[in-house]
Figure 1 (cartoon, rainbow, N blue to C red):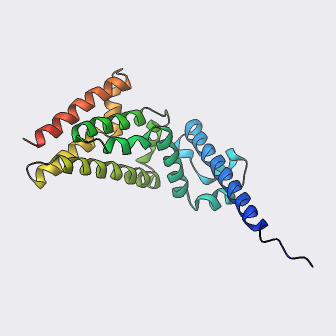
Figure 2: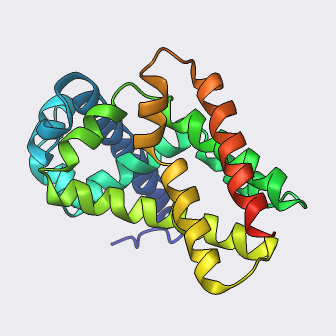
Figure 3: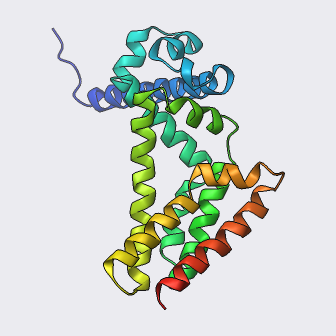
Length: 205
């Protein structure tokens, strides 16, 4: 009996990895379709499986849980919405320039997908979804805290106040509030950049 060719094993493994990646991509695309067409409340392993034309078990094997599916979907939305530009924003030498660039990144993201309002609207009655969004927002707060620490200021209490104000100004709720009067995303961004800059500048007085 002939033995399997060891050289064929890496090839078979690569094929399996490529197939798994293809399946994962298909499922994330299906999840985005469910979010867009049916709303965040309908987002489940079963709904994604139905749209993708696979079994629920296939979705489970890829993501492990609905929370895992949500994280993958959040990553897709973030990538499509330009959140990868955060690194460039944070690397600007002047913290005020860095803040302006960061506000722009957030504004571009908040306006990047029509499904985001529904996502945030449902989060209030969906603890799992809220947990995922809170984790993402916590990262935004960490970025702002790192930026404020570069600027320097009066004391720890004042620094925390500034972080909290910047966090509020750069959130989805503030963006939506400013945009509901008919302002374009660029106009909202310009206003928020000015408000954030004033907040940061006053901190150093």
